[in-house]
Length: 500
Image (cartoon, rainbow, N blue to C red):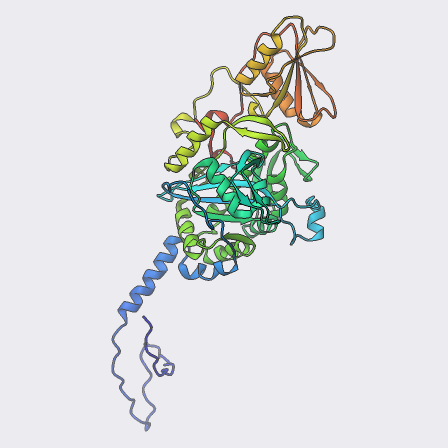
């Protein structure tokens, strides 16, 4: 409570004994003032505030006013027939390709000179558990097959009937509101908050936390984004981190590989936030929050109270408190007339995943299950689901191409399901042809076909070609190092993907 103003008292000089000095001889007698009662209530409140600030990492005063810099949007306007609310909090985080505030030097250095598509480059469904002890991040492929509900085009004002698109086109046609409606229809998860980040806010935020540490077991290079990292540990600044999360031309894993790198980045960011003292340093927290919120768009209800709640929730967070998963995919190349190739979800597995989100259940495997490994599986660099394969029958054995296609698909490879007949001479040995840019994927595929010959063919593209030879004896199971610990949804916890 505020106290009434009082007349200032002049400073008192203490003697060596800690008592006021005696009056000068001949001077006036000192005036005795009545002793003031100790303001124990105010002192106790002050001490308590300090304790709360220290325990919570930050205080309300620290974050008050931060939300004034947020650009507001209304993604829930006029929404009807929404999913039933579950347990915990769900935030839809989208990354757009906005680059208006990026300098010419940054555009050149980080290969950002192309025209933006005004669409979502990244779509993440972030679930914060009811007890605030767990954060689950679900990556939704931007090329996912989606069906937009009836809506009015935000640019032309034209009314559209429901029609199929790629998920990232929802933002281009109807902005945040249509994006939320589309995601809710696909997942049946009710979105509580919406947060939109562009290239600028991403880079500035990474720089504000002091960069992130990324480990790469193999060298990575993407000519499109300019990313080039040697094998080992790297400290990435904002621009380099943007290259890292945007790269999708490193190998045949394409967008799935990019989502895995985004998950590694987010785990590294959580590690930096929780171990670097940002959440427990009011000044640092305000600096980072101001940087991020100064260039994002969010719903009206995402403000100071939510920031304070999330920061306190992350007080005990470690990378192990976060878990990451991509939506299960059934077909990586699902053709749609007028749209092209899309990513079709595995409906049954996706439904189970989002049911777990609604019910606030962990997605990653229990720690006791992480040691289990698939018997006989060969460890490879690239997961089979990210490798596109066209099978040819290089023999005169009827049905061998179909048999090999089914076996490869059963092992997790993304086959075309349309094996063809080879046109060359009959082959004695199975051949794997690949574009040199997808050499890691080729080696992973060859590991599943013991004895196969590898042949680099520049310009072949992301689809690997397998010509089955007379030596074909079946497909060997393969897995990545992390696959054994992913559980039913193939989720990983942050401590499994950050640098050791």
